[in-house]
Length: 517
Image (cartoon, rainbow, N blue to C red):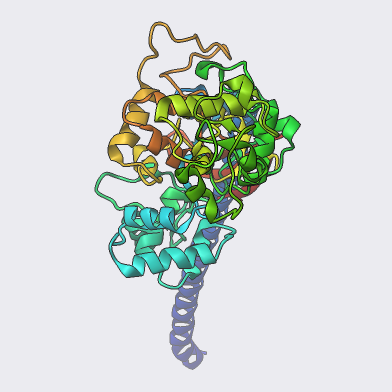
């Protein structure tokens, strides 16, 4: 027994040591597993909280979007300007559906898409000016070539589609500020770094003073306007209207409105000459069309008796038969009533012939009667808000003179920075004391917005030539807007964003584009 006890004691001591070591290892492993489990639970809880926050603030952003839709739908002004309430940032709250008594914040900004250049309707000249604005060399042949290539690729589904145009660069498309954000990446709501494509709808105002804007800042595909006049009546398409419709066109009240511009004979003469590409072509429309002239040429003269050498020479090319003699009407002396006796000439055309003769001098030959124009400058200015050159309930691509920045207005045909700044100054200044009060809504309208296009001619800097060039490209209102609604937490951090492009030309607002982040 003594022998046995002597050799058993060390054996049990060794077993005890091994058990202790094993126990420590097991405790260590269990501790590690417990730590990992707790970390996983923490991560899962944080993920759930983040998911819940994103869900809650998404609905906060959506609530802000829907609220703004209602605001835009109830806007009753016949113009759209930066002085209206919708142009100011909107802030609000919605009740937290999870935590009682808590409220979620949202912030909304609205951008008029008609304050940008529409790349689906702009011509090569305007695109070239736009490329120069974003950093391209205006005198470089490659800039002109790129502009032509962009026009050839119309229409585009998004502004970012320009990235596929040969010769387009990232700097021109996204600008220096957004390219820096694209290269460096952004931080999402989970705190991880992500690299995202620049937002094509970022407004021009968002770029800093030392950053070069890109096409995504200055261009759009969503600008549109209703094809109606300031009174809400459908515009008359002078390229397709019949004579009766043309005779119903009246000038704006501010331009001596209330009287028809075209007489029956004038309307018929205009129809014989139309297929107008731009409004400015109307300035040179003949009161006596070529067809009408051929019908009356044998009935008119510039002398009291026929056979004068000057009259014969003017007619030899087109009519070898010598004209003149008794019975012909002298267009240099005839009064309105006498001219009305000519076939196809009514009081409207007759009066224009007499007015031209009185202001420009006697006609040198009968062909000179075709120099008599259909419209005076004041009449042209007065009807631009009443007419169109294309069919359709909407007009795409017009730039709103009430919201577009001077940098965009200066790009338009006939414009420069001085003229563009004159437009901005006029719309932002207080209206004159004798101006009619704009009381379309209960909201106060800031500044002195344009209520029609003809008012552009009232600016000293906008002469008639400039007016004729720019009138094809501008409007005083808009029906396409970009709404960006953000759900914002208590620290001011944007948790969720909803972006939509709306069309409000009809009775119901239509969301043309939607994205949520």
